[in-house]
Length: 465
Ligand code: A4F
Image 1 (cartoon, protein in one colour):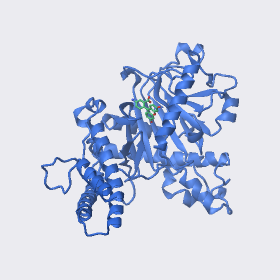
Image 2 (cartoon, rainbow, N blue to C red; image 1 turned 90 degrees about the horizontal axis):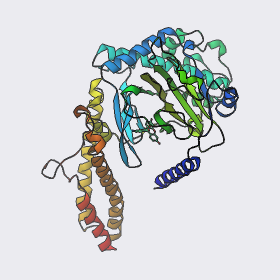
Image 3 (spheres, rainbow, N blue to C red; image 1 turned 180 degrees about the vertical axis):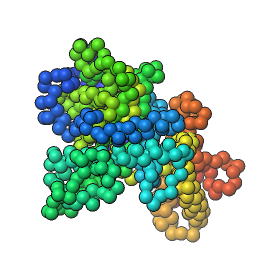
Image 4 (tube, protein in one colour; image 1 turned 30 degrees about the vertical axis):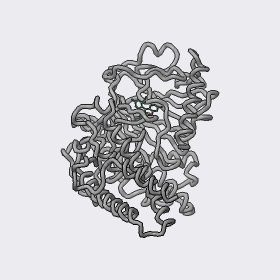
């Protein structure tokens, strides 16, 4: 409830600001502006940007090949997200790759990782090329982890100036380190006196457990939103904070826009503002109209890091260029629940890459079935009049809370599965409302629709009171 009120307040503020702006736009800067670096240094210092030539060629090659492979195998999907109670299909197509068993929830939609090759796990991929693509992304992950550690140390944001020991940075990071002399954090650099807590904190906040890959071809889009505050042009993704991340963790973004070799910067560049042909990341200080915004151009193979609390204090958006573009956005995702319905809501998309999730989902469903049985047993117990009245009343009240929440979620998911946006998806991507059953399926102990049970329980407590 509190969250909803907060969201409403934000919406009103946003609306008021846009009304006040009228046709006017707030100022923003690009590298072509004289004060760009000053603004960056003072208001956006936790944004780190690296040009593609700082990244090893071999890494570019395997990662870019990986993107194309995943696209060729139709592994990218537009998500069916829910914003303020409404359902939308995202313009950007996505796939989540990461540690086996990890998930990431954004805009009320939980994505499940296609696992990258991990020691101790036997992961079957639908093709050896998909395996190679996932392997390339874990290499990129290792590389970006090291870059983030270096950047935090450089900014004194690690709360330590140096890292305790190479071994702890991670054994598996050898490949990334071997790709670049600069990439390795050598034992010589290690310190004898780094507090353990600082080291753990630094590691936790840069050890990405997954990457959310994005793909969009602007030419395939019928319509793209216009950036509303600064007039930055076409947006692929609106202003937002990334959600559900470990507090103060770094987000690392590798960008691969498929610019043709002869791609020219647009002539309009002579005019003011960002080049509409080039992809950019837009940044602004949240709820601040004094500080100019920033638009950073992203060419093929560039990457950037959002360090520490930048994702909380600032918002970012993705500004579309003219060419198709992939990105790999590495994150430290928080652990959460609510998996079964979310998984089936995404249809059979995961089977495109791997069958890995079928086993954990089957196990989860087994537990869920047991929970249904337990629910029905509790219900028949509270129906009996053997207990002390007060105790029985308390049990029913507690149970009502649980059942009401369950019923609310079931209704919400049924509506999401039947929404217009869901109907617009191709047949093989249509959401599956699961678990779902009808009253004549007698192997279930309770009905799917809990309305009647809830009303009966409510009457019982009211009657007792
Ligand atoms: O405008 C959008 O970016 C958008 C369009 C759409 N059909 C569905 C969702 C969004 C969207 C969004 C998408 C991905 C993402 O990672 C963050 C996003 O943040 C948003 C959004 C914030 C739409 C509105 C908004 O305020």
